[in-house]
Image 1 (cartoon, rainbow, N blue to C red):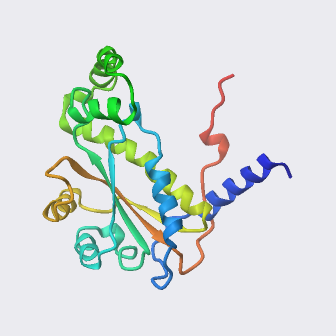
Image 2 (cartoon, rainbow, N blue to C red):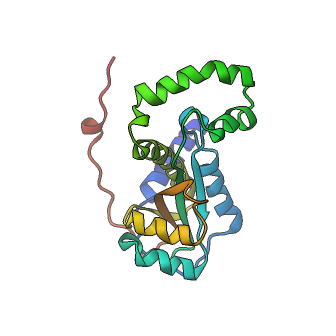
Length: 223
């Protein structure tokens, strides 16, 4: 078997292994180095125009987990049992004319300031016209949330490659969860909002057989 063949099989095996784990073995903890790798997979993920409009809260505090559980109907089994629990936050305002955007381009990405100034018209057109992001605050926030799902997918894939189970979670009251985290001082005075959550750990029972639509139904080639 060639190197690429082995890598392809390893990747497919990981996707067949992964499933939305509803309850974990509370006695099994993920090794620190393994979870740091999972977090790095999220941090290194791509985002639209390289904005990285996210923050990852690793919630290990049992009291805070209990507060989150009260407003998260879809995490009742995961919050008490997961080795690690992550809340992915998204920036509410990722406009091209914000200080954050400017700093991201010039200081983080290292693009010369003159170049960024020349690109501002294109960024404004992209956000304002191509994607209509200025029509509401919700449109901007939802755009940022879309980026966090790229990080979420990469984190879950990294976990599966390491033999670690995961579960993406949207089953929560968004307003109530934002209020819980705001009271804890974790949303930086409204800069961030909750996008999605994820639990990580080790399964307590084997998964049901995986079911997916056929490749013929999902994939269309245009040659």
